Length: 179
Image 1 (cartoon, helix red, strand yellow):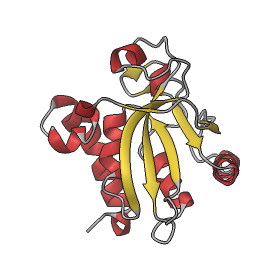
Image 2 (image 1 turned 180 degrees about the vertical axis):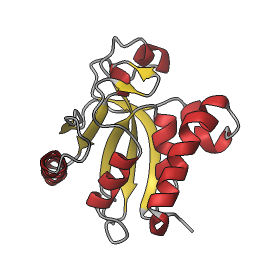
Image 3 (image 1 turned 90 degrees about the vertical axis):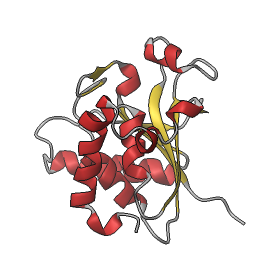
Image 4 (image 1 turned 180 degrees about the horizontal axis):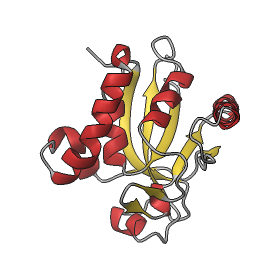
């Protein structure tokens, strides 16, 4: 049996990104983690220090018969601001950068082409700063970060930041919400 395709996305705090993608039809697995830094298997505290070079990310496995990579990236660009360098809302630092970390050359080409088209269309009114590069040095985040929003829906950050992103996804992509 062949393994599902995987793509890794960084769009700010992984709690928020994960909260959306666990609800997307065609996404078969979501894992919060750290990628594209230089420290092997860093801790959350190390990543938050900004010294490891890692980004907070979600690793997505998906079923291409149910959802295309283009659709996944459309959702990704909806739920975060790809024009702010090393920042999403009040979260600042390189660990919150906008990033698409690919596992195949085809994914990298598609992501670059999509960003180029959005830039030509001036979709955001500001330059898109999303980095697109091959996935490197990925490790899963600690267990307490997995399914954080689902387990802590009334936690302040979840209510103020993750909840609105989930609602924006559900409203804009209602046909993509898992039933």
